[in-house]
Structures are given as structure tokens and as C-alpha cells.
Image (cartoon, rainbow, N blue to C red; front, side, top):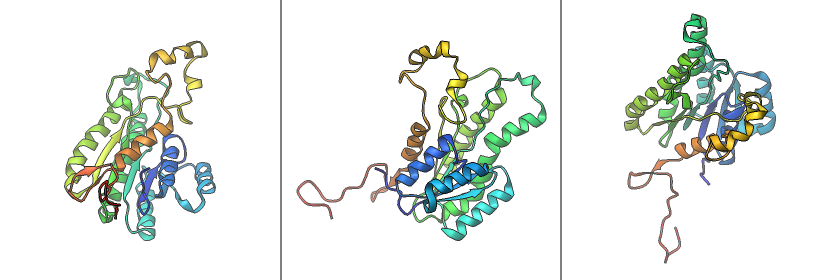
Amino acid sequence: MIDFSGQVVLVTGGGAGIGRATVSAFVDCGATVVVLEIDAARAAELRQAYEQRVLVVEGDASDPADVTTLAEVIGERYGRLNVLVNNVGHVVTRPMRFESLRDDQIDDIYRLNLKHIFLVTRTMLPLLRTADAPSSIVNVSSVEAMRGIPGFSVYGAFKTAITGFTMSLALELGPEGIRVNAVAPETTDSAHVVLDDMIHPSQRHNIPRWIPLRRFGTPEDIAGCVLFLVGWYRDDRGKWTNMPVIKGNSSRPAE
């Protein structure tokens, strides 16, 4: 079990799906979790479910004022941020040909899939730098960042941009001890993507043929990936590891 006791974790869009599973996983590992959630009903449900273990702030991850307020709340309460999970994302379920997209639709896809990552990451960097241990950023992207898909060209472009941003920022912040990674899930069976609504009953028997695991991913699968990426740290020799440090040897008890 990875131990996140004493660490402050921010998850954007933590009220449902992958975000909710990620919140739960960090809470189970002892972290202090802050959630930015735009939906009031989901925010209220989170407060009820986790009581004092999760601080829920209502707001829009793509709104500069809301994100600034969030940073102020975290700074005043905790004085630092150890982990940032940029989870907010747009699920596009209706394909549209590129030439049919209006400017406002393109702007909205940008806002929901890329802009908020730039905004939240930039705003939280001072708090990440204040952490007393190496801090970490995880961007939740999509498999569409790595393959073409007709009818979703702009969506795919912004998901691909997350990959480039993650790789470049990792090199930029690495010398400061801030690691940056991304998770790119395939279709995940969640509240946002209800597979029963997407796959006709006559085709569901093909799922084991489509996917080696014989099932689609779950939010808990992706949350596990996030915890794995965040759980790395430098040992006393300066090496990156996600293994527990065991002092002593087989003939002498650990100290």
C-alpha cells in the first residue's frame, strides 16, 4: 500500500467517474484531498461521503477567478500542494465533421480539454514548489491523443497537445523535483461514458474479442495508474523509486 499521509492532493473534476475514483484512492492511502467540482449536487455528495477527509471547493477549472480562489484556499489551509491531478475533460459522444464545427464549439472543446490544464497547472505551481518533498502533476488525457478518429479531429488535437505539454513541462520542471506525467485511458465505463448506452445489445458479446482483458476499463483502473505515477520518490541515494525503503538486512531488524 502506498502511503500518502501528510500529503495534500488536488483533483479537478473529482465528483464523478475517474475523478471520483481517484479521490477515493488517495483518501484510502491517507492523503488530504482537495476537490474542485463544478456540479453543486456532486460537490454536496462528496462532502457527505467523505466529511472532513475531503475539502470540496465548487468552481470551474477553466475560470481564472475560480482557480485563483482555489489556490488561495489551499495556501491558507495547508501552505503547500504535493500532488495535482488535472482530471477535468470533455467526453465527445457525437461525431462532427471538421468543417461543420463553429468557432464557439472549437473554443468550448479547447476550454474543457486543454485550457484548464494550462490554467490550473500554472496557478498551482507556487504551491507545488512549496511542498517539503518532490511534488507531482498527473494530466488525465485520452487514447485519442495517440490515434486518429474521424469526427473528433479537434478533440483529438487537444488531447495530443496534452502529450506535448506533459513531455515538455516534465523536462522543464524535473530539475526542481516536480515530476509531470499523463494517463491516457481508453473508453472507461463511468457516469460520463455509459457503455450500455453506447454499445448496442446485439454487439456486446463482441467485447471479449475487442479487448484482451475481456472488459472495458473502470475508473478504479485509471485511479490506480495515477497513484502509481505519483508514488515515485527519491531514495537516500538520489534514485527514483516507487518501492518502500527497507532499512537493515535479513539478519538484523529494521531500525
